[in-house]
Amino acid sequence: MFTPHQKRVMALYRQARRTSLDWIVFRDQWEKYCAQLRGRFEQNRGATMHDAVKIVADGEKELTENLHPDPYKYIYQPGGSKYMRYHPPPPEIIYNRPTDS
Image (tube, rainbow, N blue to C red; front, side, top):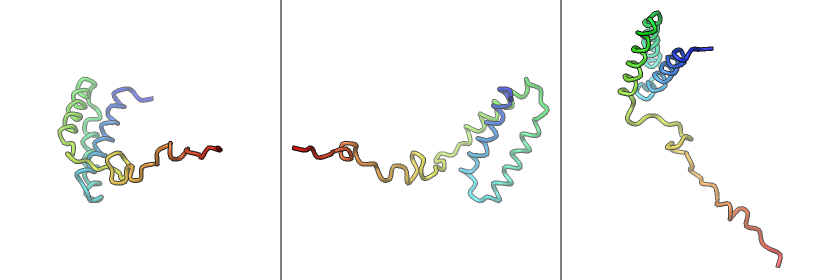
């Protein structure tokens, strides 16, 4: 199992990689950036817990400052171009059965 600090570091790393895709379009440039990002994380691997907490807090602050103003959304996510494109018909139309009279 991972400690809460390890989970926080891993979440920060994953989120930094994901949000970098909003800024970097070409995959080869993104892979170079991810290698640099991984190097930054590896550089601080042996830090003491007191320093590590501050480093992670600074990293989270840097991440929020560098968020893209219009992040990429997958087409079927809310806000995507195909989200709820074809609304389902209302239930009263689907279940409206003629009565025998």
